[in-house]
Image (cartoon, rainbow, N blue to C red; front, side, top):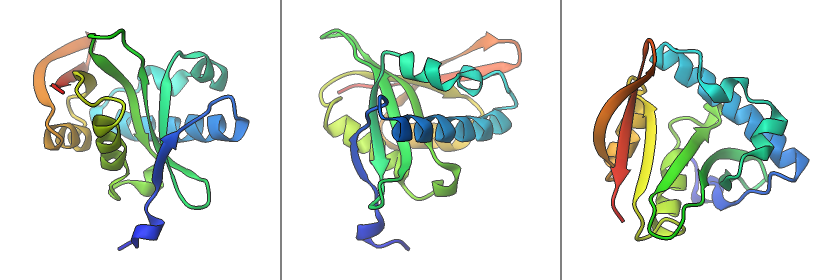
Length: 161
């Protein structure tokens, strides 16, 4: 079991920094490749997203960063107008760090920090059991499933602040 000193710290990520942006891009592609296998759908848009496209997205970024400065995972969202729900755009963990609490750490930090008191919405592949379990465990309520493409079923979740 890792010691508390090995546990990543959550901090904002600056995607204008080349090293950070490249790490986020690499981790995102690897994590979405795993999700594609879980849900049986390889058309996840982030799998085809270039580094330049990723950097151009108007997103706010939080990262779980280890003591050596390596990104273990990240959370991104588009800032909402006051009173509007926060919509999570992506939550990705380096597959080498799966099952170590990185996603929980990021979400708990966001829910008690930048998302405190706000409604938060997220979607994930309905067959992505680890993500479905995570959102349910952290108090998100499952809404209606929907199918944005043939062969793909997405689950929607909402957490009231």
